[in-house]
Amino acid sequence: MLELSCLRLSQDKLAALIEITPQESHVSVSDVKALILRSNFGDYLVDEEAIDDAVAKFAELRESPDLIEQWGQTFVKLANIRNAEVTIDVSEDKMVARATITAAYGGNPISQGDLVSAMQEAGVVFGLQKKRALALLAAAKQADPGVKIKKVVALGRQSVDGEDSRFERFVATPKERLLKPKETEDGRVDMRDLGNLETVEPDVELMRRHPHTHGQAGKNVCGEELPFKQGHEVPFTVGEGTKIAVNDANLLLADRTGLPLEIENGMKVDDVLSIKSVDVSYGHVDFAGSVLITGNVGDGMKVKASGDVHINGFVESASITAGGDVVVGKGVIGHRLMEGDENYSCTINAKGELHATFVQYSHIDAGKDVTITSQLLHSKIETDGKVTVSDASGLRGTLVGGSIDAGGEISAVVLGATAGTATQLTISGDFDDIQEERRSLNNIKHTLHDKLSKVLDAQMKLGSTKQEDREEGMADKLSATLHHTRQELVQIDFALDYNQQMEDQFFSNARLTVKKELHPNVRLDIVGHKLFTNREYGPTETKYEDGKMTFTPLTPGKK
Image (cartoon, rainbow, N blue to C red; front, side):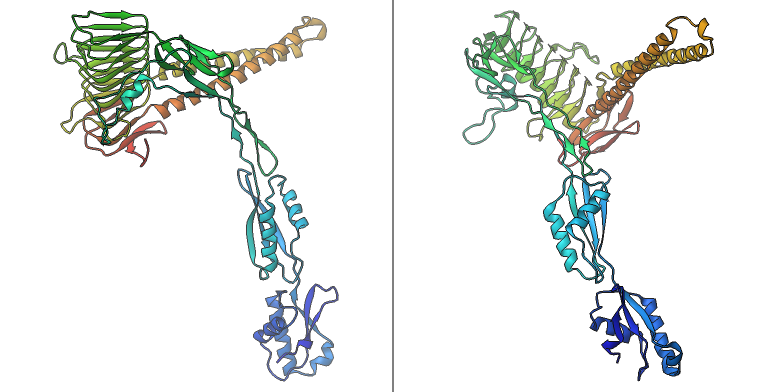
């Protein structure tokens, strides 16, 4: 067995040496390794080739003992001290820095100073995670030689977008009654009982504006600031019949008795004409304000209001025109004036939204969203907004037949019928305006490039002209024109980028969503991208990708 006395530390104290001396028995690689492990050099980095060299020399000396006189005192370097090493990896987004420490082979561990220096060399100057870093250093110090330990040592700070002023409404609006029918004592929902339509009195609190938040810039581990969206104060829209509270600029109050209606960033209180029913005995209605009809609107009757129209009952083959929303508690029922065409006996024209429980054989023209909570059957719908055929739970809502031309998303729980009833859906929105703006911007850009070329040509021509032959001030004039033209081109490029964002946003909103069943014979046209169903589908949505529109399974849990 090799004796420990065969080993010694090198003069520079960085390596373990073995002296080659005569041995009584054969010396193997295992013998040498066992000797190192028994010694104080067990943590050193072993050189396998050096061990083979030492074993060979021991064997050679055993066969020829006289070689000792020729060699003299002979040493082989078996193992080396190696200090711990640290590397720093920064993530692609520069938000995370990780340190990897390779434990020392008998050498010095990584100190706090070493780690900080390595981070600085890697450009990491922000977000040091002190506890994690100390834990890494401690773990690496206790680890076996050569073991690699990796931990996060720095984290960037995400930017926080500010929020614009937020508006909290305190009073219920009429259309909410349709979306949330009254619950009976036994817990069931009575779709026919929408509760009372409540008006407000002067000085009733209508809405509070919550302050905007500024937001905060982020910073990555390299110390670079990350952009953030700053929140803005949004002013109240003080509609007719409302006022700002004297002692609270963020509180909107009613200024008269009437019907509370929500408008963008505010409220209004409409004068209300309350009518039991509109029929031949009452006559047509034309009112400057909002109209509340607690009963029905009968066949052939006309109701016109500058504000909202709220009808608790049915609309049967009548004409409703509103400057605001139209809310029908029960249903809208009409019939075709002539078989096979889309002229109907019941028409509703609303500059705002249309809400109803069900609609059949009717023509609806709305400036904003159309929401039907039960059924939309064989009707013509035209709206700049979206069309939703679904109750609040998303469990029922059937759209069958007719045609819809919407500005945004069309969604239903069930679309079409098993019998293959023809249903035409079109989504156009403001796509044509977006495309026309792009054409105009590209034309302007082309004109500016032509102008830029002419200015550059003029500058080159001027440069080859003798100083005395040049028009006074021409050089400055050309430079100013060149600078201005380049600025205009930058602005056009910004406008084109924004135009592309608008197109992307259009296709994000212009989609079809069917939550349960999509039946055959449904035709969909989204600005020229046409789809047709010739079979049954389950939950389905449209997807626009790489210039193509396709049907795809609806993502679970998506509303």
